[in-house]
Image (cartoon, rainbow, N blue to C red; front, side, top):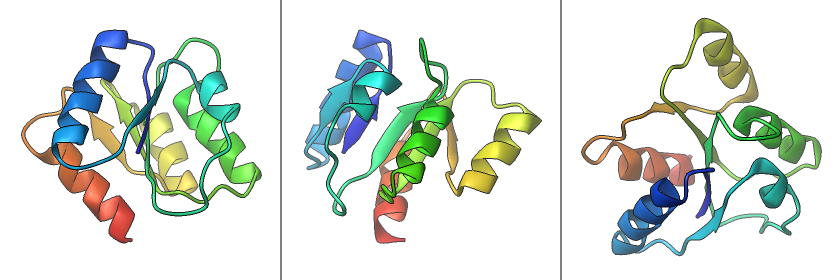
Length: 115
């Protein structure tokens, strides 16, 4: 599981929650930091915040797709507008709206990994 969020507290909270659920977690503070990593071909999921400093979450994901990285991904955002929803749909990535309530996050990750 790869988490990309510019808020250190959010990264820590997400990592803690997902580690309790049994996921191995690696965190990044920006899309650029994620793009510098060698990612596995399978067995992981990307959880990417849309609003990041520098490159956006969706743009980071599109860059990975252009590099033929096909890991399942989930885009997180607080206020998805129609344009973002359309772009995410075209990219084949679901949007998970913040705040992440209940078990919505783990359900979305398990669905992405099983697809």
